[in-house]
Length: 313
Image 1: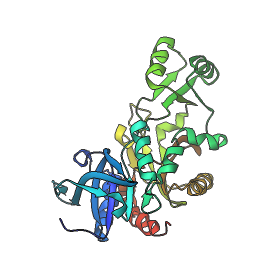
Image 2 (image 1 turned 60 degrees about the horizontal axis):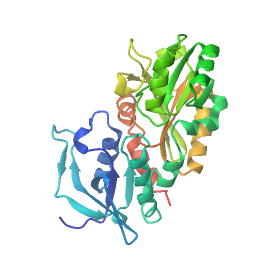
Image 3 (image 1 turned 90 degrees about the vertical axis):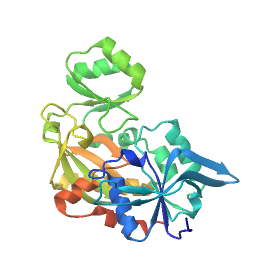
Image 4 (image 1 turned 120 degrees about the vertical axis):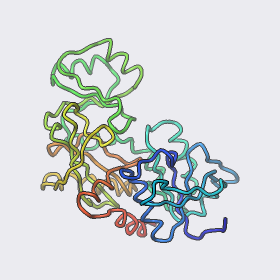
């Protein structure tokens, strides 16, 4: 295959696993492809460092919007990632050692490649724990692995939720309604580790608002409504996206967080609000929701994404 001058590398899960109707990565890359970029796709286990150069074993791919077979892979090659103009880190969490190690590799080349989001910043911004900076804008919340502290929290607030600090997409969230099963929670903590413990907000039944932030600017939002049998609004957990607008309180809070994220070199993120409260999810590893926003509003934020990416130094 001939050499390309305009390359976007993407570190993501296997291309065969994505759902192109709902996948934000696919939307971003389709727009990049329209702008003349060639897409190189690889996974974290394919990284190698030799003589301060970072290589990845992967594929150049062509992507197609309106075909059942939505991609074409070319011959597997090893690419010096410094040949990329941009590099997107888009694999799903969890924030584990595999993920951390990938940021260490990519840190080596971040002065020669525009990496979104910055790998050092990704390592420092634990999605849920980072929200503790904005604790006064959240429902009553603690972070712990201490079952007795959780038990006391339940006694005080009655209905609570437990959220793994390093998970994603609504996975392994537990709702506790007054009754505290000590053995069940103990086993859960042994498996999961540290958790965010938060007072339950009944208004979640009406949904949360996913706010999209690009380069320090609040760009739009969708409302994600849980199914009738769930408290989880994540699209991957059966939530439905509907149109919404941010009120003045929500706008001000979103701008406050957006400014902080930009200072910390987070280019693209999504934050979740319920009843004007931040509920602890500041999504920076692989923010989602852009296709749903496009479907509801007619606005393709992938265009704004790449327009703003040009401004990165």
